[in-house]
Length: 324
Image 1 (cartoon, rainbow, N blue to C red):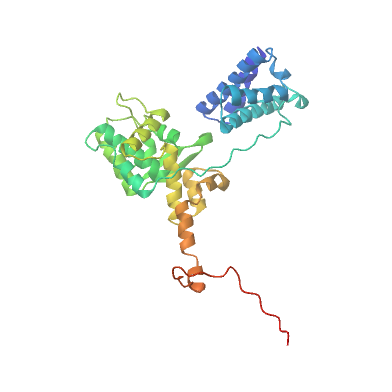
Image 2 (cartoon, rainbow, N blue to C red):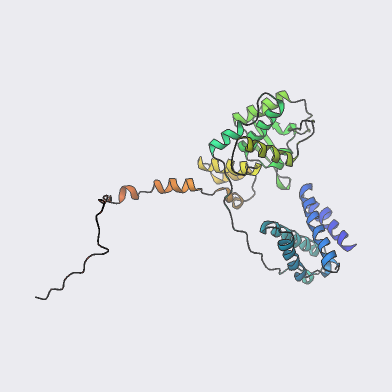
């Protein structure tokens, strides 16, 4: 009973009080229930207050070797467990000294990889993929345009409602992580794509979902992922493309256009500039461009081309000693 009570207390009281989204709360609950099931089967069904750091370390090994989870997935599970026990201590159900993750060893950080970014030509082919003579084609074109043109997340796109899209002022209102809202301006191309879709789509109430499936229901986050992947395949883009790829591309293209990181941060809805820095990467193309513009080309003397079959000494001949 304690496991069920503590998990419910954490998710329905602590997480709800923090204003976390329902999808986030469900994900936390699923993670905790998976750990509870592991404890039931592998650790003699100990109560949550009897869990030790050894139990958690063995669970980490189970995730890595039995379930083949990657470093990111394992790190997320440990973070949820840390937050869970920290909250239980704060609510007075566990003594601080009994927190099994109070001094838990830090897991090795996953090596940072550069995000996948589309070129301007690839974006052009992607946006041209949906057919323009059917409603679903106009819908998909609008989805691709708003993801690339604003950098919003797939979940933010899926939760857009009719009254959030103001084409008179060329803005959309987005509800991001933690329930934080922000207003994002639209350029003319994105506005025209949304307007074309709205004109052929059936009428929707103000609180109704803006993007809808062929049956008229609201599109889910997973459905938006599927449409992006489908059109990336049709556009013959070899890279693995997702809505987050378009978010990376949006930020990178703005950076190359000279926009300030602070502006990009506000458009992306990041609360800290450090979160935006992952998008401020340099690519091989940027490195080649920087190398080509280096002033050494005009500052260093030119090296004459060597004639074929001319042999040069390895080093200068030693000077003869003056014996006179």
